[in-house]
Length: 365
Ligand code: PMP
Image (tube, rainbow, N blue to C red; front, side, top):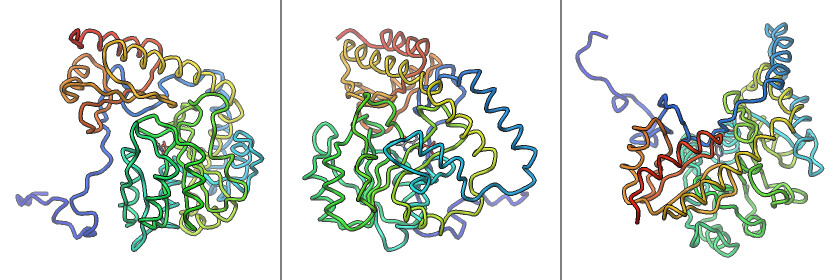
């Protein structure tokens, strides 16, 4: 440590394909109103917390042993939560859907292989591609951030990727992708198609989900998470639904005992209270709609969102507005899309604080 020579990442014998890349970088600032990473800012109900604590306490008594590698109880709970005729065999889980996506790319991507995605989209898709040595192919969306079946098929045919990643509703735009687009892309390839549905629960009741496309489509994977609707981001539990053979592929790359016994117990206990946990979702949707309406009235251009966040354009200087909000103890997200910012729907009070600040900071136009 006394060596005066500055030694940095660039000096390490790191893989050439990782040189110069930037890591996932949502700022982690201690701010009163944090609406920057699409968390569910509602605390979980106390009765549910107590039931989770009991489950954890029981599990602690056997924590000297490795957890169940196959987590059957958790897979049963997730299957019955999802419905759609899914069973334990259709479900796989990991520490956040990020890890599920990483395992998918470890098994089906990797050096010499490619994944097609459609930016602007969840930044981790390309970062996980880089981490697994998979080439990231950036497709282009239609107007309004939509992807028509024809656009999807054109990109799949032209680039012949080993995987296609859709995100629906899409982060950061909030746009949902139609089932026709997903089905058309699936038919245009004999490789893997992934639909990241992290925000599915924030859509309208009866909104189409790619889960309904699974029967007969053995190369289709739908990923979900408990981080958003279930307010469980800190517990780290993501999962997928797919044909049973997909889990067999992921068993080849997962680390043994990757899901801790405590994670499994906490998630099973939370899923047993799904209706209470999901009661918060209605309030979040109300706050999201409030944000859309209020920002439109202020002259911004919010994109219609089927998730728990709103992307809005019409910001003359997004960096400046981000900083002005931060001075007021409010953090939202600057994703580097010129003239745009993204805000997560918070509790009623947090949403009010954000909208009041926006009214103050927006010159009348
Ligand atoms: N997919 C999307 C689209 C996301 O926005 C996020 C989190 N921001 C994730 C996946 C990952 O969530 P987690 O790892 O917490 O399940």
